[in-house]
Length: 172
Ligand code: SF4
Image (cartoon, rainbow, N blue to C red; front, top):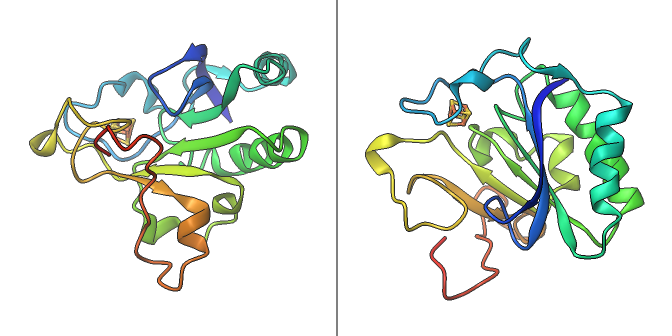
């Protein structure tokens, strides 16, 4: 797995203040993607022990709500194993922190992946410029969904995502 950046005290990619890992590699090619430089899976830097420590140092802080995996696409084939291993380790070491993941894949295509069991929220779907709406929380276009993973996995209709509603004054 390779990555471009680790951002800290991030308020724009999930609830609370978060550490965000921006991985390299995405094959969705959404029109007017804001991060086309992240599409190349060979771009950026190798994700090494120093990068992992940088993330854990953030998660050690009580005011950090959790980690968000973004990119690029954390579920690109170049990233799936690395993100799964990291999510497992974070879930074990920091059981009270939340794990969010942004992906261009839709819920119906990923809900059986092992990684889903370690996530609290998935923001799914490609960015569609025709459905862009700047007033939406945590997502760029109306087709995307901010999914409460645990509630969805526990529901009888697993293919119909239950949306995350952390703040009812906001639009998801
Ligand atoms: S999924 Fe995200 S990173 Fe990939 S092309 Fe679409 S908007 Fe860009």
